[in-house]
Length: 380
Image (cartoon, rainbow, N blue to C red):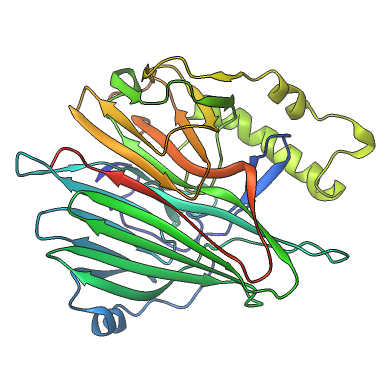
């Protein structure tokens, strides 16, 4: 796994305080999303129980403190590591034509400043989703799935392995299934959201966020996005996102200040006055992609609203490529930290998100929605 660590083990996880993170919709209002890297207190996971209940499918469990990792392995050499209960995919090693494997995800383990013994893993593939109930005459209730229970494992090491996680709100009004599928040449992350309410609609905002490891953004290209409309954005901040200090500290401060204001004002500025962030976002770029072989050396953050369902990330430094596909989501989020950082270092990655940020998804009573992401390895 491509990891930069500040702890002795890349999987040394401890329980940390839950945090509230925000990102912004098209008008500049904050959308709270799940803080995947922050795990609230819970009972320890029984590795012995998981081994007994779900053995025989090519998945091995290992306890790390009160938490657990599920290691998925196929006979062709492809492997993935899934963190429980956070649901973060920390590693995806894809089998290559030369017989070896190559890590495709960037992960980082760092020690939290607030708690000397608390470590958090960031990067990889994570789910950042907010479910907001919309009921006339009633207070809006927001919930985000962050603690996942292992529901089922299917498949075998010869063909494919599928791990199904589930999370339900405290009132059983919203159920989210998260299905991770490992095949010979692809890693699939799929969400299935069900609105169980008889009367309330449900608004879904957020993304499936992936950090693809590269040699450097300077040697990395996005292929196939020509003529796609886009909006320039500030980086999406979640508990699992890796954000360089040169572009994260200012944004996080702005987000934090605005969130406090919005929380007290009921999701909007009073008296019609614009916030500083709204004015800043009006000045951000909006346009159409004119480069079908776009170099990602410059620091950039965009949401493409008409991107193709599949496009390719090529890293000429590692001589590797990944075909990124999406289903259900209409938006493509892309963030490059730029090339001013160390080659093969913590910030040598490209962040891709299948998202519903500018235009949230609305589910009526008893309706369901399915969306997902595919990371296809064309180098097998």
